[in-house]
Structure formats: structure tokens, C-alpha cells
Length: 239
Image (cartoon, rainbow, N blue to C red):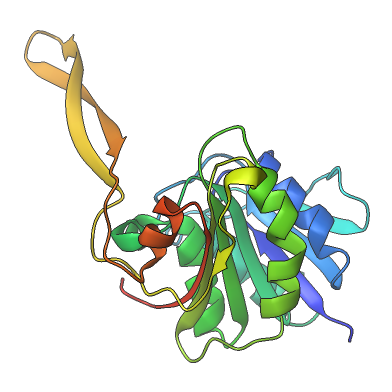
């Protein structure tokens, strides 16, 4: 079956995870890639208004991929790709592979999920893919083709996306794939705001720090990841 695939992400055009996804995706169809020029994590479903959007061809290091950079957000990338850049709407949108989990209530902040939801709103099936933010990609690279083959033609339903998360452990420690995971209502990271600088003697500059938690409800996406399993499930728009 011939498919047209649009890939985007929120880590920017140079992200390693998206490159690995693009190289896998070319085996499944005709691949277009439109990604933000810079890092746009936690942009959720943001779109650009009241200023221009710039699209430029990009010499992407994956054979068979037509690639562009966009000055906007991941959702802008999907909207421009579907409405303007591509000759016809894609059959599927792949968003990722994000550097960091997009599970539990963190999904509401995720621009990886936001881009996938935009595709869903436009009537296009979509898959958001994420992995733990560590250098070990053994599980992702081992299961990626299998996950794509399983989900790429499956419709998750109206206003729903497929949400896939890969654990960041060695393949030998992975416990397999857990499907039909529901979204955890716990949090993945406990955030704190730490002062790092006094500004003009009256203001304070803060940075956010996150501590990964280790508990979740049974049967959920985050619980699967805590079990060192690949989590696969459907998510309904919660934004």
C-alpha cells in the first residue's frame, strides 16, 4: 500500500530522534518532513498568529525524505504541511521521536502530542512517539519498525491519537510491549522553581527543575514505563 507520511517534532530540525524516525518511516511510504527551526518543547497546541511563518527547504540527512524547516511551532508545521506545502493531505502524521516521555498529565504540555492532535482535528490519523531522555535508545530502535507496522494504518478514532513511549533501558531489561494503556492521572515529574540570579536588585530569575517520580496507577502509560515496557495507547484531546 502506498502511503504519504508527514513527520514533525518539537525538538527541532536537528533532533536525533526525528532522524531515526524518518529513516524508519521511508520503508512505509513517501515521507515529507516539516520541523521547527529550533527547540519548541512544551509548546502544547500553540499556533503562530500576527506574524509571518517562514518555510525553507532543508538538506535532511535521510535518503528519500523531502524536508523543510519552519519558523513556527510543531502545530504550525502540521497545518502548513497539510494546507499548503504538500500536494495532498498525508495519510498519517508521525510526531517525534521526542526526547523525553510524553505520558500521564505531562501530555497536556507536549507539543509532540499537540502536533499529533492537530492532525487528528484535520481528519488525519496520527502517532506521537517519545522516549526517555537518556543516551540509550536500544528499546526504541528495536521496536520502532514493529510499532509503526502495527499502528500506521489503524485509526485511533475521532479526536484521538496513538501515543507511544519507549523506556530508556538496555534492551535486555525491557519487559516488552504493553498495549491499551490509558493515560495516568499522576504526574511524571515533580517540578520546582529554583532561583539562579538576582535581577537589578529587585527581580529574581528562576529555572524549573523536574524530579522523575516512580509511581503510577496500574494499567496506565506511566506504569508501563516504570515496568521498563513500551507503552502503547490512545489519548483523547485533553487540552
